Length: 207
Image 1 (cartoon, helix red, strand yellow):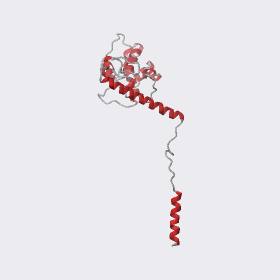
Image 2 (cartoon, one colour):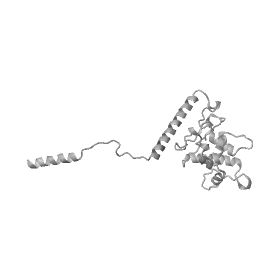
Image 3 (tube, rainbow, N blue to C red):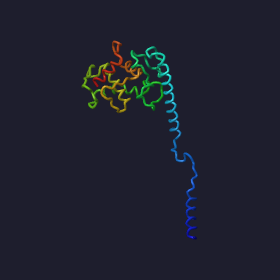
Image 4 (spheres, helix red, strand yellow):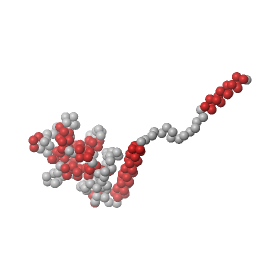
């Protein structure tokens, strides 16, 4: 009987030592003030983009995009000839949500670097680029022509947006109106005429 009492006493002592004083979130990860601020800013950007998309969706049910620039939230877009070409960089599914909310992608230093002529020349001549057929420079002194710069800029910006993802055969990607507009201003056609989405398609047939 004494042994039995000692046995039960031992159990009670062990149970007492494992009393759990629950404290919620005790082991949650801690963030620095800078990290918390970044998380808050990212949440604000995502909510803003969601609100802008909802507003655009509402307007889209009442008027076509070719009727005006109401769909543009970055203030840098221009109306394009067809509905498929008319969308803002803030609607671009390839735009990273961590991209600084500066108003428009084309106003960032990153974009300026992407369409810099030296970058385009280098990209054009990289042997590993998957060209459908190997083009040759059409400009003076073995340099790219203005049209080639424009076409390669489309490709570079798209590759940047894809971040390593490869497009399947026959798949198409349209660049935002503001991006196309900025590239055309940087590398304009002498005639001032463009072929809309067909021009962008040309680069993907040869590159």
